[in-house]
Image 1 (cartoon, rainbow, N blue to C red):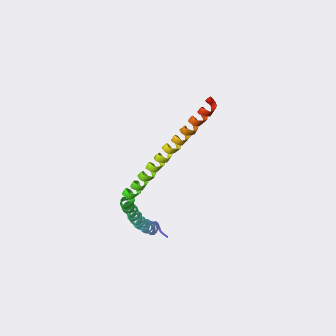
Image 2: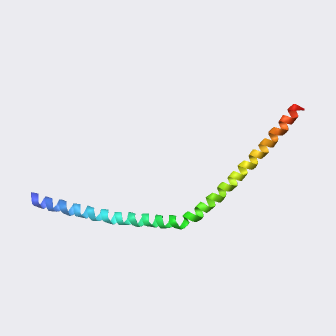
Length: 81
């Protein structure tokens, strides 16, 4: 095989690789667009739910802290008595 034929063959292979990369790049872009659309759709309800959970977690922590303080006060009263 002469040099010019090998060069032509290599150029064809490179062109084929470039075309495959373009196709894969488009598929990846389509997938990224899909993920971004889904995220935009569920973002607000998701954060709303997280905020509600965090509020309940804070309330629960405060209630537990109050119960702990009450127990501590009862213990101190028993020790003082």
